[in-house]
Image (cartoon, rainbow, N blue to C red; front, side, top):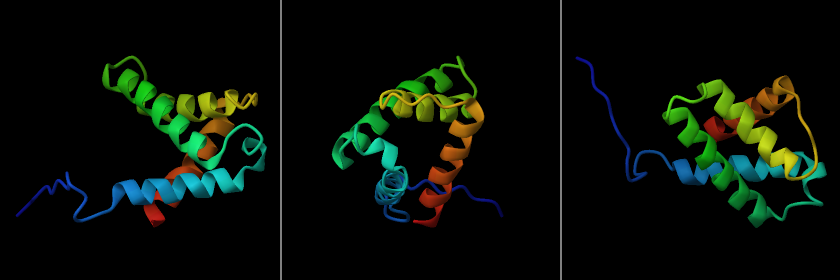
Length: 102
């Protein structure tokens, strides 16, 4: 027997809470962001940038990996920091690991 479970209302897993904890952890880990973002503005920017690049991914314009890289690059670029694709991908891995652990 195979089954697929969809948790649309967050009763099985608190995705929003896990994401917020992971984002706060990322923000706290990268002090170079603190002079450009508050905790709140970082979270708001993350969601805005994420939506933009997820839409591009869903429209088939970019790959899932590119979506992850572009999200990180945009967030750091708003703080006047240019990241290579490899560095952005490694930062994205840190976020995903934190998100999964929460």
